[in-house]
Image (cartoon, rainbow, N blue to C red):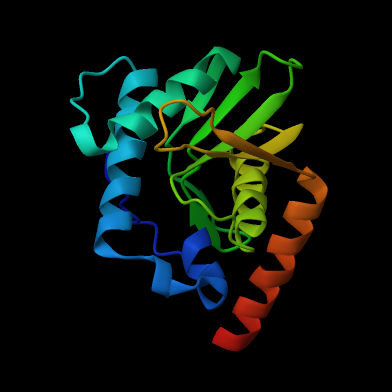
Length: 178
């Protein structure tokens, strides 16, 4: 599972770049995030994957969240909207067993919540609506934890507000790129 953007369009992450504090993106944090994403995707896609010991607690944290996933609708699929001019790769769309809502989830292995995460969710939600016909009822961060005795932290946001924030940033991105 590689993050390959061959669309010729900027990704959600490219568009949010001015708001991303890069001091937290160490080689280790990038490796951890990529590895855990691959482990989770492989698990839900029923593919074989061996999780590295040092990242296994994050995978175990995902497994505590997994019972909420009634049905996986889409996972790690590159979407591109050529009319709006951007692309992205949402982590997962699922039916949440707690409330039967169609939900966009984004896996995080960081402890803190970055301000741009809501915009990221908004961009993915727009792509899912315009490219897949999927209207999100809920968007959430699922912050996977390294402490084995703790459940993942979940942050739920307003779909409309996340989409509005992203569209504002997309407009600014286009204006500055001229």
